[in-house]
Length: 250
Figure 1 (cartoon, rainbow, N blue to C red):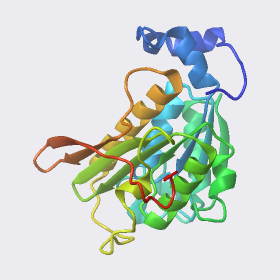
Figure 2: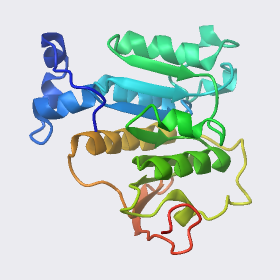
Figure 3: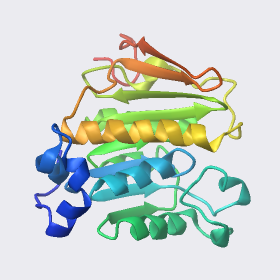
Figure 4: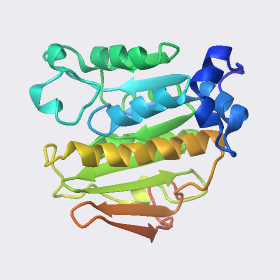
């Protein structure tokens, strides 16, 4: 899963030294991260933390899609936004904050949310996708493009004090439409959010992305992790492909 071959610099070896002590990551895994490109759909409460963790981990290229300007209500959870940027484009705040952390990043920022019109071109620019969009129209568009191009899609979602996570590997397990054939009728654009819940599932999604890039561990393919933070309970459910799925059925 690489776009080009570039070895680590001495500076990068120093920055990622402790990370490379992981026995199944090492310098080889760190080079895979450097040469990988990841798209994050919506860089808000969930996606901002995903992008920040992947930038910190040394992923070489991030493709980030998020429309609109920073609003006061963003600041309880969208950790790449700041008070001084209220009223200015979100993607500009995202870019400056990520480059402060990792100036070596190759950043592509798109001031649009994912849609049927741009999903294919956005996915074409990356090796893997972390989908953090709140709306099913966006999530379905990203799912379709990922399946079409055979690229791993990590699905992170939250609502109130609950969250869920799964990893979609085309041809190996179910896609998002297998789990949700149609958008839930009760789903709304605005909903209760605790920023720490967004950040928790985001960190877990970033871990899945690192695993997918480096080959570490076991992905969540065919499994859905459901989290209830009010009770602090975690449940892993097996999920299967739907024979009649409109997206991934043979």
